[in-house]
Amino acid sequence: MHRFANPNRFLKLANAILPWAAGATVILLLAGLYFSLVASPEDYQQGATVRIMYVHVPAAWMALFVYTAMAVASAVALIWKHPVSDLFAKAASPVGAAFTFIALATGAFWGKPMWGTWWVWDARLTSMLILFFLYLGHMALMNAFDDPQRGFRAAAVLALVGVVNVPIIKFSVDWWNTLHQPASVVRMDGPAIDPAMMTPLLLMAFAFKAYFVTVVLLRMRGEIAEAKVRAISMSQVHG
Amino acid sequence: MIAGFGAIVARDLRLALRQGSDSLMVVTFFVLTVVLFPFGVGPEAGILERISAGVLWVTALLASMLSLDRLFQTDYEDGSLDLMTRGPAPLGVLVLGKVTAHWLTTGLPLLLAAPVLAVLLNMNAAGFGVLVLAFLIGTPTLSLIGAVGAALVLGARRGGVLLSLLVLPLYIPVLVFGVSAVDAAVMDLPVRAQLLILGGFLFAAAALCPWATAAALRQAVE
Amino acid sequence: MQDFFDMGGYAGFVWPSYGIAAVVLALLFVFTWRLLKTSERRLAQLQAARGRRPRRDRAGDAPAAAAPHETAPAEPADAAGEMR
Image 1 (cartoon, rainbow over the protein chains, first blue to last red):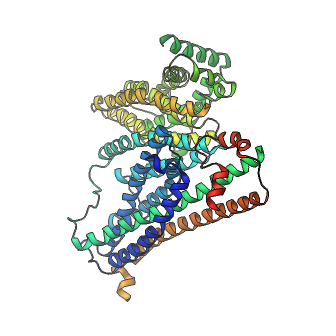
Image 2 (image 1 turned 30 degrees about the horizontal axis):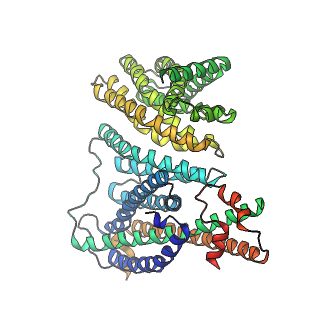
Image 3 (image 1 turned 90 degrees about the vertical axis):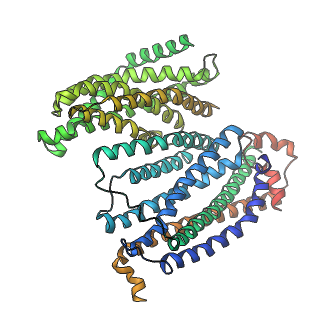
C-alpha cells in the first residue's frame, strides 16, 4: 500500500491510467446513450419515462459508491497517514455530490409523470437528500481551514462519523415513512428487469464509473500540483 | 478517571454559572421560536395540536445547537485543551464530562421548558409525560453528536454556520423517533418501541461520540 | 425522428433528466480541468523562477519543508527535480 504513498509515484500511475479512463468514459457513454435512448424498449406501463432510469439508477449507485470509497480512504488516511488517500477523499466528494444531485433531480423528473408529484417524502428520497447534505458538509469542512492538513483530518473524521450514521438515517427514515404514509406511494420498482433494459443500465453505470475515475484523477493531479506550489512558496518565505 | 470526569463537569458548571447567560439564552431562544409558530401557521388549536410534537423537537434541536460552538472554543483558545489532550486522564472521559456539563446547562432547561410550551401549543395532555421522557433520552444524544461537530470546526472559518451544516443531518434519527414517540402517546398508542430506540441511540452515541470527538480534538491541537 | 424527440409524450421529462445530468457532469469536468490547468501553470512558473535563482544547499530547506507535516507531497527540491 505504501508503494503509492509517494505522490510522485502516484502521479506516474495516474498519468498512465488517465487516457484509458477518459477513453472508456467517452466510448461507454456513447454506447450507453445509444442503448438507453434508442435501442431499448419502452416499458409497457411507464412508456418512455423508463429511459430516465438509465441516468437515475446509475447516478444513485455512484452516490453511494463514492461515499463508501471516500469513507474507506478516510479511514486509511487517519490510520496510516497516507497522503494520497487524503487527496482522494478531497477529490471524490464533489463528484459524489454531483452524482447525488443528478439522482435527486432526475428522480424528480421521473416522479412527476409517474407519481404526479416532483417530490415525495419517501424513505429513499429523503435519505438521498441527507446524503447530499453530508457531501456538502464534507466539502465545506475540507475547505474551512487555512492549513489544508487540518481540513484533511477533520473531513476524514466527519466522513467516518457519517458512514456510521448513514445506515441509521436510512433505517430511521424507513420507519418514519411507514408511520406517516402507509403504502399509498409505492416506490416504482418496475417489473423484473428485462435484459434489453439491463444493457443500457450497465453501460451507463460503467460510463459513470469511468467518468468518476477520470475526474478524480484529474482533481488529484491538481491537488498535488497545488500542494507543491504551497511547499515551494513556503520554502521561499522561510528561506 | 471518575475524578477527571467529575472535575471537568464541576469546572464547566462553575464557569456556566458564573457567566450565567448561556442557559437562559438557550431557553429564551426555545420559547421565542416556538411562540413564532402560532403566528406563522395561525392560532387554530387543531393545527397547533397536530404539529406540536414536531415543532417542539425541531426547535429543541436548533436551541441545543446554539451553545455548541462554545463547547470547546474557549478551551481551545486559552490552551486548556492542550493540557487535556496531554494530561493523564483519557480524553474520551474528559469529553464525556464536557458533554454532561453541556447537557446540564442546555438540555435540562429545554426539558423543563418543553411541557409549558406543549400547553401553549394545545398538545393533548396524554403526550406530556412521554414528551418529557423522550426529551430526557433524546437531548443527551444531541449533545453527544454535537460535541463531535464542535470539535471538528475548531479553528475553522465561519465555524458556527459550518457546525449546523455538519450536525443537523446527523440529528435526524433522534428527531424522527422523538416526534413519533410523542405522536404515538397523543394517539394513545404504545410508545415503548420508540423510547427503546431512542435509548439505543443514546447508548450508541455515548460509546462512539466521545471517541470521535477525542480524535477530532487531537487533530485540532496537533 | 419526430417520435424520438417526442419520447412518447414524455419529452418534457426525459430530455431534462438527460440534460441535467449532462450539464452537471460537463460543468464538473470543466471546473476540474480549469483547476488543474491553473495549478499546473502556477507550479511551472514557480519552478521556472527557482531554476533561475539557484538555492542554497538542501539542509537549509529542511526545516521549512518538514514543518507542514510529512504529507506535504515531496520536498520542493524533489518536486523540481522530478518535473525537470
